[in-house]
Length: 281
Ligand SMILES: C[S@@+](CC[C@H](N)C(=O)[O-])C[C@H]1O[C@@H](n2cnc3c(N)ncnc32)[C@H](O)[C@@H]1O
Image (cartoon, rainbow, N blue to C red; front, side):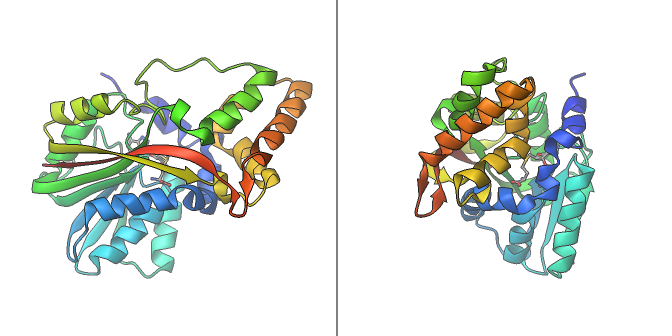
């Protein structure tokens, strides 16, 4: 059976640790894209919501504010470290109607038809078997319930990925490209695949909206902050994984120069392209 054990290891490992030690960096970078999910989900007071791959829980707590105390939001993740941040943030915000659930969205035995809405901010691209995972999430959703999530378009459409990739690769070489559709940030780059996966999983009225925007890497106000962010980030660590010390120095200098070219009045801004995906049970 296909499992997500590699992802469980990854999202509880040092490679992912800035997601829980510096969650504010990711919130600054992708928070505005979470706002697109909230707009698409149109949450109503009293609704029961599942946030898949909730991470450190910014979207979870925003959803909890939207559904109010008569509703409930469950933050689901395979990372114990990240869930502890979500739980802490919800408690600090006095959001007693947030629950955290450590489980694999693909395999967890949810109570059938128990959620009005399933949402996610970049938390659904890591499934070994996406059709099984989305069928499982559909079974957890009430009849007529909604799905709304955001995922990345292919890497070449996302400067936040290509700018560090090319700067680093000039010194340490390119990493082995993953097979198309492999679990990872760009697994849902192909919109036809997104439609096919959701349709095969039983969802209807699938809509894939093209959103072109910019993001700030880790909320960086200057090139030094952007370098500090990417070198501690999961993606940046992967790019630099095999760099010899002297090559690493050269790669970091190139990174800084590359980010400097995107420095403006709002700090470092890089093009980003996402799909905002909605569907109905
Ligand atoms: C890119 S992070 C996004 C985190 C958060 N949604 C945010 O926007 O800050 C992806 C998240 O998905 C979680 N994840 C990956 N595979 C999962 C699975 N099979 N079930 C539940 N969560 C999963 C990871 O642990 C991680 O927290």
